Amino acid sequence: MNANNTDGMAAIAVTLVDAPGVEDAVQMGDVYSMLIKHFCQRSDPQQAYQYYEKMQRKKIQALKYLDAKLIEDMHRSLGMP
Image (spheres, rainbow, N blue to C red):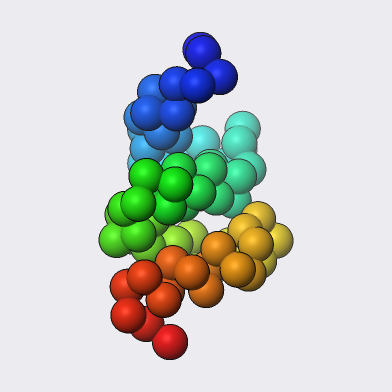
């Protein structure tokens, strides 16, 4: 896959998020953080936040994978505190 093909990477990551048993082979925090960063870079904070919420529901520590500023910026762009 081309290093500049972030849409292709995101499509693969979206598939991984919902794949049964994938937690045994992949660190899901890495997958979620990749998707969140991708959608933030694409100026789609709503989509990024949906994956952030999924990450929270799975009890994955977001700050282990994401910069606090990115989380703050995402919240701010959605009008959240």
